[in-house]
Length: 516
Image 1 (cartoon, rainbow, N blue to C red):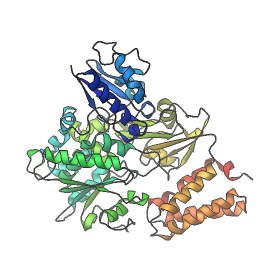
Image 2 (cartoon, rainbow, N blue to C red):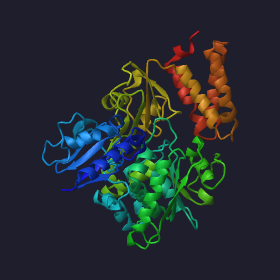
Image 3 (tube, one colour):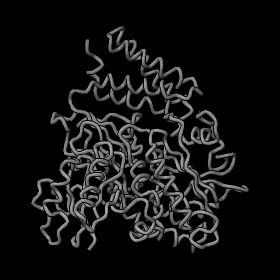
Image 4 (cartoon, helix red, strand yellow):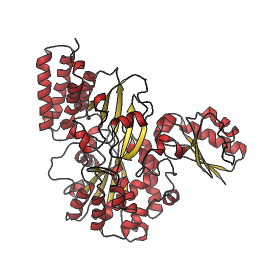
């Protein structure tokens, strides 16, 4: 059996030396004259074990990590490529069968089923692991039936708004126009999030398949992926994957021999957080400055180039293939209440085991942080958790039993957002964090509406006066008034949600605003 050795080419792994590890593996294979192949896969999302090296065996993959380039020769010396059930397992870096690692085994990976498993640029590998089965089924269905399947699954937008995907698709399908578009929002700008990047770098064909299915469902024949400028590696992977999909007949004028057409282009973003908002994204995609559009009209009615447009997040679109492949009921059986399917949690900040977790909605914050994350990296007591990116609320330890679903978080004054969870220990100053939220809004505002543009700037000044103990009581009242103005008067979620972290910090960590 020809051994395959997997070393991730994912940005997170590369940042800690995966390229050097891969080069060392290639040298050892050549120098020893081995019948082995190096595969640059995506990351499994276990970032504390990166670079993770895996060896394919008759019994499944055996993992080693974290591996440094200088340790590769010793791994080969240990017999990691030898046949037999105990080959290479005497090495200190051996983790045993990768799929048996508890952190992975406890997950329910549907969207990320192939991420870290397949060669991300091999159509054959993708197909052999169930890829394009969803598209094959969709090609035999009427567009309205595809929309009904997605609606019945309960899939909601994974980018943050949580809007039902089926309703958005139905609106675009029903709209009369000479041309319609599918736009993938890959402008992943929230702090502590990286799920979109992992898909684009580790399983890009699932995104292309999902976009193609969306086109069949709505009558759209063109799609664009708007990738954030800070993701150059993901952008290059997308471009290569798109070319391969065209060459393999899965994109273009005759998708999979069906006679139906769908084209996709990847576009690099403008480097602005506001372009993650769908209408600002469309403005940028059309070549203008990324600024919010007034709504109505909604993009589903009048979007890109004035045509009906589906704007969905990467994870939303990448989830569609499994729904079409295995059926709406299969997907809907995961989750709880109105939050159906699986959630991709991204653990970051002061956490021992940072990484991506995909599991059914309903896992508690406590289980995510301690069960998967292992608690704080510093070993100090946890004090606060921010869920939902820089505009998400800060939760104290007392709220860690809150389930991770849209309604439960909203009931506690928070948002789920894109699933990012940032952990802070007891050294954090929440007044400073509240100031950061206001400053972030001031820096990233598109400037179109006064509450966001001016209110956030005044907010920074007011919080500085509060921290400096200048007329604290009066300034706390002014801060509350500013938060009310931002919530009620802003044109989009940037200004409208900035009060969430500020007010949650005031509510749960008032003592940090009272220091003299």
